[in-house]
Image 1 (cartoon, rainbow, N blue to C red):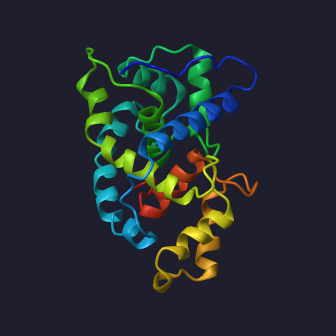
Image 2 (cartoon, rainbow, N blue to C red):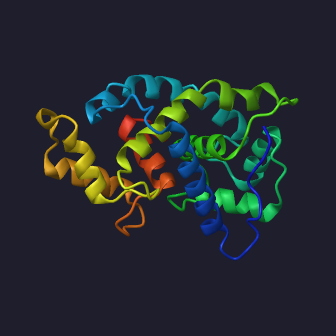
Length: 222
């Protein structure tokens, strides 16, 4: 796997990473234009059992890199993981990724945050013919298709195509495809509130991933 994550040593490292994600999502949108098979929220919910089953297979990988078995991955453990992915990053770059994926600020990457980390790496990196370890290959080979589908779902909700979700996007998407499936307003608002971690009225891809994993039913201690 070859890295395309770079140039994150400026004071605005997180913003830089956010911009890279937005650019990548825009590129994916262009490439997938008109190809989505998602027709309604109901068609997404029907995929939840498959998502949960496949994402849970990453638990063994998480536990392998959680060297001290404390239920979270610390920066030095993340460094080992990234090196196995052949992402040889500088210390400040590793710290940026760590902080970006430690969305709850617990100073450790828990299992659900680890899934978010893998999905972001899947989006931001490109596979190459190399000597990747079996552990590293598992991250892409076993759940890559699931991550692609989750990105499709984000694009399905992002009606105005700006790379962020707002409450209007959520309500429109929840209700427009099949009026008979209309979700109660309080449920739609709760779903949005669960994803809007910084409470700024917009949901980034990172926030969506974390919220969506909880939505599917992947628990930290599961």
